[in-house]
Amino acid sequence: MMHYVIIGMGVAGFAAAESIRRRDPYGEIHLVSEEPEGYYSRPGLAYYLSDEITEKLLFPFTHKEIHTLGVTQHVARALCILPETRRVELSGQVRLSYDRLLIATGAEARPLDIPGSEAEGVVKLDCLGDARAILRQARRTKQAVVVGGGITALELVEGLRARRVKVHYLLRGERYWNNVLDPIEARIIEKRLKEEGVQIHYHSELGEVIQKNGRVVGVRTKDGLKIDCELLAVAVGIQPRIELAVAAGIAVERGILVDEYLRTNLPDIFAAGDVAQVYDPASGKAMLDSLWGPAREQGAVAGLNMASSPEEFQPYSKKVPFNVTRLAGLTTTIIGTVGQGRDDDLLGIARGDSETWRQLPDVLAVQSDFEVNRVRLLLGERRLVGAVVMGDQKLSHPLQHLIRQGVDISPIHERLLQPGAPLAEIIIEYWLDYQQREGHAA
Amino acid sequence: MYNEFTMGFKRLFHQEKTKRQTLVTGQVVPETTRCVQCGICSFSCPINIDVRRHAWLGQPVEDSHCLTCGECVKRCPRGVLSFERTHIFKGA
Image (cartoon, rainbow over all chains, first blue to last red):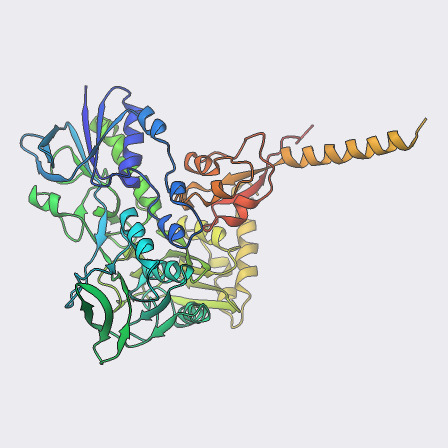
């Protein structure tokens, strides 16, 4: 009987367990996670903070259903991996033997690197425990400061606003998420945040956390502005949790390097999800994603391969990354490569983010907008390489497929480039034609 | 021979037939790659269908109790759900 050990119970770990069980009904599956809550929807935390769902809703599966999967859960910290003896040591002096091991430890928030950042009242949004802590503290918070960028920063801003906390949002530069959104998109988001009562401070870098008796009472920016607050929420990016892998001698760069079968350089050890740095055929580089969909797919493929012999291995092919999210209440789809450069508000990657989004080659950008509805297309010579759809999402689905499948758009290339071109109409028309040609269902 | 009662009955029957036909010709389908299992769909369902489970499994909401009311489709923050015709009567 095979022994499978999965470290991490996020979506990659859970999908791997499901996949192993489908392939091997008798193998022993051990799931190791420090979080006592088990498997829950990490992206759902944003809606939990904003009071749109209850905590119970974060759990997609009942205990009974997880039990039916036939996994043994260990609420423990994995201390080290011993590849020579094929063992994993856990806290509580537990040792697990493995025939196949999956590292799906995910990523964690980067800490602030300024004086006072260890004070009580400095919060992040990594896990359910963090969300609970924010909600607990928000009850006695009148004013909060949020620093950072990307999706998580806005989840914090909006979550706190929904809890009637006055929010100051510090941006280092002159706009939000400047290496993914263009200036107009950023302004739309910022305007909506301001309408919700959020005070945005541009060109403001956090200098110091002011504390009293170990608690946050305010912050001071580098240019001397002092803001009183009881809560400081930080979302300056995430870092893959690679310490275990590094200590075990597994090859890493920013994340754990894996081959097309999601194997690491050590035998029978696989990696998947936010911790894995996966080869991206489009850019020719190994990239990090922090996206739920790819994490699930990687977990499923890794699980399948863990329960298969090498000749049956399935390759994982990294697809064009996309995410649908809500920014300041506005549904936004980001597909493919849409920006470049760096964002001073983030150190590396953020949650719900993909490094691929910022690999924009020299392409032409066209856009059209009406009030808050906006679409921006990044045009290569023969295909679309990226798109941002804000507000009205009619184009989201067609663009997702046109970009992901690399559909030849040369017949409409010229029309799209004409000044004032009705992009939405042209894309929809082309999409309907394409579906008919390919015999897709309407 | 028609009277008010039979006319009323026929109208009611016609309405019920139309409603049933609408229900069986359309269903809610998920696009799994967009779903993050946040649960807003299941939370919004007035008759407590676990729509999220269908989305995870990539299966249409074939529950015969589904009213196709559209609450889950409307409230999903990520555009996972849409209506699709079932073509159940196609060729009938």
